[in-house]
Image (cartoon, rainbow, N blue to C red; front, side, top):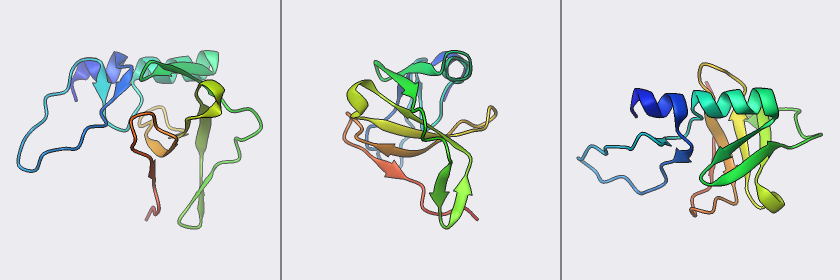
Length: 115
């Protein structure tokens, strides 16, 4: 990822990586992490744009996320019509996607263990 993408990206990279090659990502793309601009939108406005969808904080569902028996401080957000849901690590320095359901790009994920 480029420094510019970590600052302002609005899209995630969901393609299958090719073994033995390096992928050059565009300035608008990150891998499993929110950009600083998205994080700021989440904190200030309780919403942000990701992959051309506006995600908003899911009210009443902020008790964290269980991962490997531990409760992780995560922010739950959902896209239009509630069809896509994301859980984001509540950490300004590393706002990683730790769970994705209903991804329009066909790739859901869930962190299963933290040591």
